[in-house]
Amino acid sequence: MKDTQNAVIAVLAVSATILAAVLGLMMYTGSAALADTPAAGGDYIIVTGAYSDSMDLIYVIDNQAQLLNVYRYNDNSNSVSRVEQLNLKLAFR
Image (cartoon, rainbow, N blue to C red; front, side):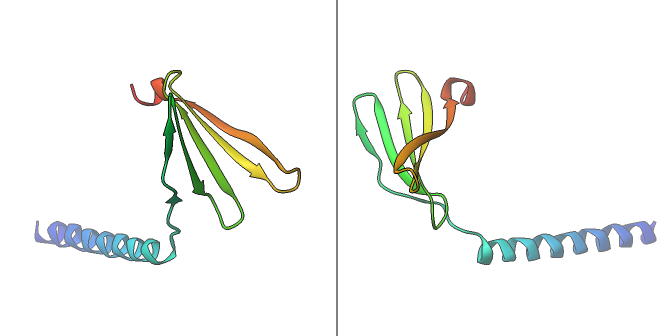
């Protein structure tokens, strides 16, 4: 009985050490999500956010239709294109 308890304690200790190491690495190597102050007007909320060093995204929430649209700016074509559309009714049931 003592041998199995010691084995379980050893496995738990090793697991805790691995998880602590992963958490420590994530804290120092993870990139933070950045967003600006949202602008709201009528049925829309618009906020920009940095996706990477070279790409910013524009998030537009349509409150009436309950949709989230994500757009990105393309430097090469000097245009804005939609990347994703999310139905907020389905996401937040």
